[in-house]
Length: 228
Ligand SMILES: Nc1ncnc2c1ncn2[C@@H]1O[C@H](COP(=O)(O)OP(=O)(O)O)[C@@H](O)[C@H]1O
Ligand SMILES: Cc1cn([C@H]2C[C@H](O)[C@@H](COP(=O)(O)O)O2)c(=O)[nH]c1=O
Picture (spheres, helix red, strand yellow):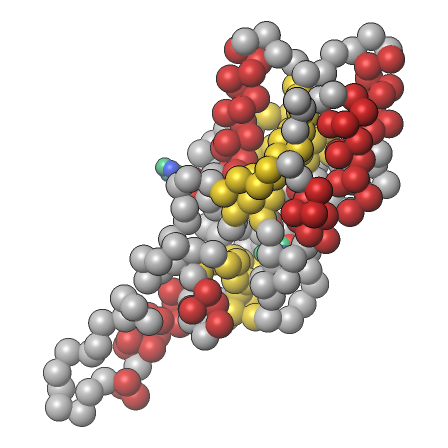
């Protein structure tokens, strides 16, 4: 039975890498895939992984119709055995419904990849619809880690190095550096829930550890921060 599978996780947990691996393994066995993405950091029409791999993809922007696109492709003699949709959190809910139709009406497997929640811990509309409709939701095996060593479950946004909880839901950016593509100094960091709730990023924790305010008066070593 064809399936709609949602591979969900935080930023930087290997979703795009897995998408590229699925594509590689299937194409090595002669299967033909169609790859979609939206707002990838590497630019329009590209699916990129932090491991350095990148492939061409169809940009599924606003108003793009997955079902109509696939029907056009198939009726003009094309072949598609499976579909990959990366950055699926950015899809409109209606586009996720189209992906479900691709599975049910066209009999094609759809593998969607995305982060579930935004920097405010709220579900993205595309991810919400995927959770509602997917046959299976898979979390990735290589978990991203918070600075404290706990599993990272949430995405934090920083502006000018400080964690923020207000702003536009969509700002394309990376965890690696402070520069977002919006031209502002927007960055992201994955955190455990405890530290997301306390707005304690790695930099804030380091600053707290160095602050004289928190040093013990007797001059003993500052308390370890590993467990926040
Ligand atoms: N230099 C590196 N060496 C080994 N693994 C790396 C390196 N850089 C990134 N990675 C791996 O790549 C993962 C991010 O993969 P990516 O597919 O870009 O994530 P996602 O799409 O979930 O944001 C990291 O969690 C890490 O496991
Ligand atoms: C948390 C959060 C993230 N984004 C953006 C930042 C990145 O461009 C993508 C996630 O890509 P990844 O391959 O999973 O790292 O989403 C956003 O726009 N808004 C947010 O709240």
